[in-house]
Image (cartoon, rainbow, N blue to C red; front, side, top):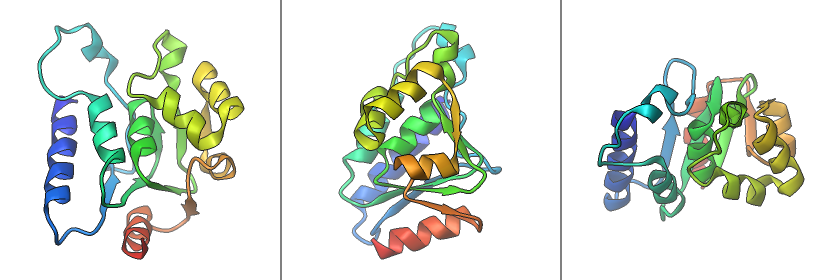
Length: 164
């Protein structure tokens, strides 16, 4: 939603400007990282404001380490947010993917560029063109996530952020 995008932008800018902040951790709530955009909003008139692509670029360009704590699902724009982060920790039961292609849409926040750079072209093409969701174990093998945890993902992400 626009409110989530605005909160991400505001939070990142505030963290970057605050010298006492050494790292940033991004998580979802209620056991889900992010299911991405609400497609019902695609048909509404365009409004001025924040967009996902520039937010993901803002995450990626942060001088402070940004860690994604992925629980549940990171799909579509949610996965693209995670791809912009410098590090990704996933709960063992998390699933990731770009399912928008199954309804004829391409990932719109540069996920089609970031994913191949991270996991290689063959694996990225498979995910991008099929829309399949991959489990955390496969994401770790591909290099999509840096670590899998069985414990509290947020606490693990904070530990990693403190370490880096």
